[in-house]
Amino acid sequence: KAGVTQTPRYLIKTRGQQVTLSCSPISGHRSVSWYQQTPGQGLQFLFEYFSETQRNKGNFPGRFSGRQFSNSRSEMNVSTLELGDSALYLCASSAGTMSNEQFFGPGTRLTVL
Amino acid sequence: QKEVEQNSGPLSVPEGAIASLNCTYSDRVSQSFFWYRQYSGKSPELIMSIYSNGDKEDGRFTAQLNKASQYVSLLIRDSQPSDSATYLCAVHFNKFYFGSGTKLNVKP
Image (cartoon, rainbow over all chains, first blue to last red):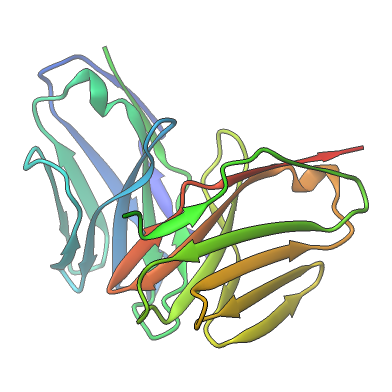
């Protein structure tokens, strides 16, 4: 089975711009979660989508949004980028069953200049 | 109060020794517990999941869960330099809560 894929792997943007990140989960997985990881804050939960519906949301401003498509692929959008948004953005997929095992993609490294 | 707490380390052990990583969590109704390994510059990799009290062994790894004490641990036997990484504890209740990770250094 192919693993979780994320595109792009690296991204450089300037303040004020917006960015869209993409995640393709493991085949058959219906849950996709997004995380932000920084050296200072660790792994912070952004949101989770299950069957095209946002099921959970973390404590991030409205500039961070996401969506999930019918094929379970998910996108995350950040508008009006700030320097502090520089981070590794990780997508994780899960079957959404009771086992809840979650598998991470390689991440997208976003640098905001 | 943080939902999941881990000692940030670094924890240094000699090659061949047992490394013991600990994690406490605050939510009494959590049902699923996980250990992830993260190498520098890489994404977290799931290494163990545990759902019921007691021990669960997988190769050199043993996860231990004590729900009454809200405590989960990971033992790595015969530690190797390749085990040097940050180990993240995760707890699932409606969503995942991650600890900040313990950095493990295995010295040859």
